[in-house]
Amino acid sequence: METLAFLSAITTGVLWGITPTLYSEAVRSKGPVCANAWKSWGALAVSWVVTTFLGLFEVPSLRAFSYITLNAFLGAVIGDYAFFRGIKIAGAGKATPVGFTYILWATLLSNLSLGEPISLGVISGAFLSVFGIWLLYEDGKWDLSGIVWSLIASLFWAISPMIMKLALEEVNPFAASAWGSVVMAVVFSFMASRADFSGGYGLRKAALGGGLGIGIGLTLFYYSVSRLGVSIPVLATAVSPLVTQLTSWIGGEAPTPRTLLGSGIIALGIALGAS
Image 1: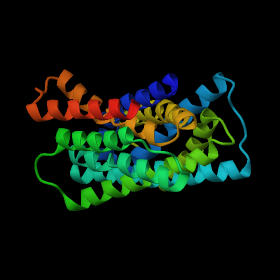
Image 2: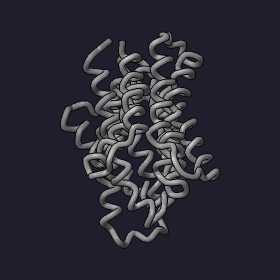
Image 3: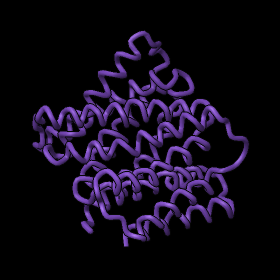
Image 4: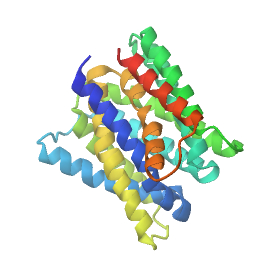
């Protein structure tokens, strides 16, 4: 296994564990469309600066751009919008474990659609990681509509890397991420054209989250997919809910035996997949 590519996926997971707190205020106050618009603008700015600075800009072929566009619609537009709806209705504590079942679906789909070999370690790691995430978050009452939205996000997130893997055969991951951010920004800017953008502090945090999570995190994820395939990078992102939990502990929330067990199981799952 390529260590740098795997560490890139882990870094993505860490960033994705931090960004939900940056999105939450904008989602609560302005709704998922407005929050996604600001997130996409932050992603657009950062991804293009990084790609240009590294000298990795390239214009994709029509075929590659079609895959990039489809990936952006499925993952960043439909998937993220559905997840933000899930957060708004059910809260991040319920939306996250359901959304991250994408790890299982993506692992299975990568074998069925792309013919990627799946080891017993990867399959076991995927199941353990999802179970650990469930242990971290499962408490209280579940809202059905919020869970449905989160499940929709999970399914579209699972399909998205399969599409991008095809684009990455022709274009480098940094340029692919930059062009994908253009598609995402155009779509959400149109959707939010009549939105109220007053009260900008929460929206600026959403833009920061987009810059970190999409502009940097998603770019690193694409790099990992280009080197390792789909199943191992998506498993590595299971670290995201663990990072979110760790930040809450640092903030003063006491860990419980259940959350400690869930954290250990997630770590074991990732280790199994990487072995």
